[in-house]
Image 1 (cartoon, rainbow, N blue to C red):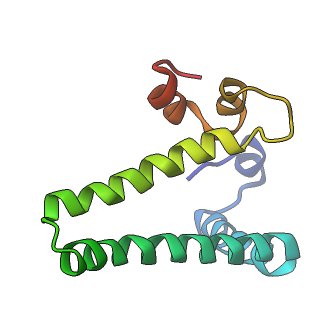
Image 2: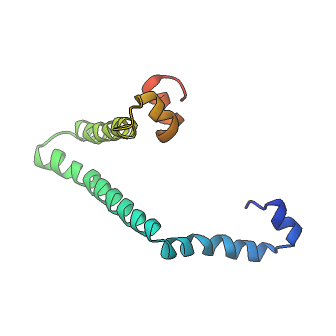
Length: 119
């Protein structure tokens, strides 16, 4: 757990620091409407994404009779599309190129995947 110089100088106990660290995110969630709304939005998005991944084996393996290896490739395609979409969609309307967007929004890992070098 991180303790700043201010916390060390004030003599904050480990228990008090732990309590503050555990309570602060919940206070932020319920007292800031934008944090609550974005959290609900992200929960819906991730819920739909994981339901989609759960439905793929049923649709492609049982419904169409594909083998588990070929049916699993569909999930890989959706994952790749998510990476491409998240890297390209960050700069829509800003006039930035994809590499500039990757440096500021997506991060070094995805830039390494797409451009072969870190952002």
